[in-house]
Length: 149
Image (cartoon, rainbow, N blue to C red; front, side, top):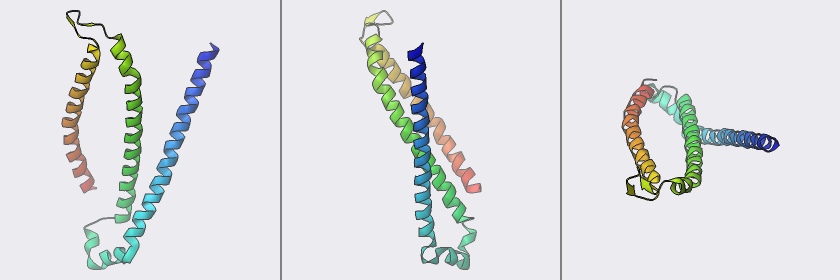
């Protein structure tokens, strides 16, 4: 009743605040990086030199590319860091539970305490390998698409 309602409210508040903090980090970090990179690009009149030398045709809209690349970098770095921390926390909570709750005999045939942990580890390794194989193909496709844009 009341306890579960309070727990739901607290969880929603914590999740909302965590999302707010991630978004504020994104805004501040992206603003700082954009300012830094644009200042470096404008230093020594590089933008003018590129236009006069004709090298600007090799790089279309460099200021827009800087902005887009920094947007991707910041959002992916924050997402990867948050997901890594979340998954490490989940592992720390559920790994001991899985070890304790695993039957002593694997498939009821031979003695292997915590065997479900080994099954989960094997499943994770296979999933990671499959993701790597598929992802490496997607990286090449994404790189080619970015070059065309």
